[in-house]
Image 1 (tube, rainbow over the protein chains, first blue to last red):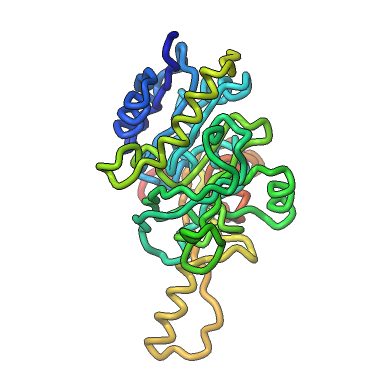
Image 2: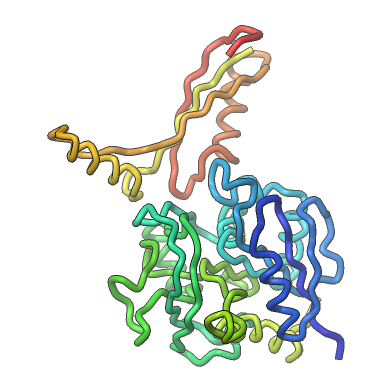
Length: 237
Length: 87
């Protein structure tokens, strides 16, 4: 069986690209880097927009990166139903590009929050979570200064009603509450998906927890879900 | 040549954690009665355009497409004729 191919976009200032590359290769998938000036994704099955500080976070995190030449190809890929995973700065870029709704504000603490968080999996019918159990709590670290997700009241309600919230910050026991949310995001939102279910943005870093040696392996469930779903026949493109 | 002074601020109702921190610091300095501080961005844009109407149209589009994020921010700008050189 040919291996699924990940394309990891590299912007000036990306710094989790190599982690993402190594993580998906560890799980048996193929991977290549895609420079931000490229206009084609080649035979990429899943695009990863990695964490980092693209363009120095100038103006707003992700605001400049969204105009990079490669983003037109990423939008076409998503429009055809191709998988896109935006992690941390990648999530911020997806918001700025309008591929996901909402915007990021500075963390409520005003600090760069770098620590493990617990995420409750709200949906398991997605290619990003198919290996998870409903309500399962994953431990995945965050590392960001602007992850305080915001969406206006009525749109937030629509997002919730449509089941587009995929991950929520919770306590280790799986409950929402004070102390579990590292940044102040509305409704404790850590990750959301588009209506079609093929574009996911999340602030926590699954690529940083794929081996017990690195402090955990729950990231394997998310990245592994993508690979398993693709192998299961979702290779539509 | 024209110069636009662009002000980008958080929409009413959007929490501004930096503004809150500054308000607290002002209180610690002994400035009483400070009820709220809202932070924002200030940008100067110098551009060429045929007339004021065109400047206004282009700067407005810049604000909508890049300088402000309409989900959480609002903007306003002032226009003035500017000299060719200098800062």
